[in-house]
Amino acid sequence: MSDPIGFQCRDHSACMQTMLAQAQNHCEVAGLRLTPVRRRTLEILLAEHRALGAYDVLARLSADGMGTQPPVAYRALDFLVKAGFAHKIEALNAYTACVQPGHSHTPAFLICRNCETVAEADTAPAEGRLGDAARAAGFVIEHMVVEATGLCPDCAGAAA
Image (cartoon, rainbow, N blue to C red; front, side, top):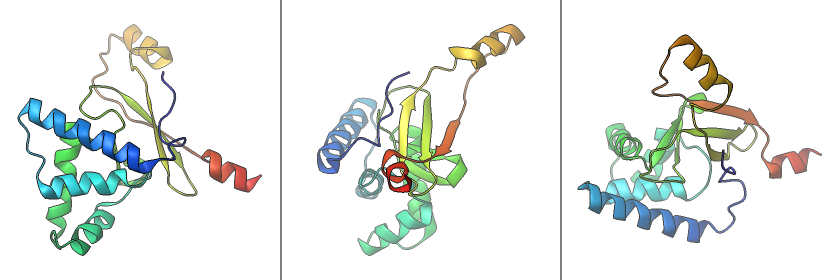
């Protein structure tokens, strides 16, 4: 498992520019369209490393004059998830930008219960106890969601 990405990122501008460039490149190679609404939705998710609900995204899109109806946000978020640029955080019913856009991986999410910052760590489902149990049962893991809730370094430090 790699180190979690999200808690330690302090230069959001550089992070955003790198991820947007990767997303644009992936779309060009894969023949996908990163429309202005989709791009702005990705920018909104990248602006901070915390999960945002669809209505939070819609409010920001609306403020930018990009639509006021929920399908605008849901369609953009659906595209970003399917393209591998965002993840749905099930525990929060919210979305966060992917830190490895366009790459096939199985992330685990570390969610701060206080500030809702989300860090993403790559994990392989075939490794560890779950993979061992699946193999023993003859089960093939195709998709899994791993979400852990706790305190991020900033909130843990403030609580101490």
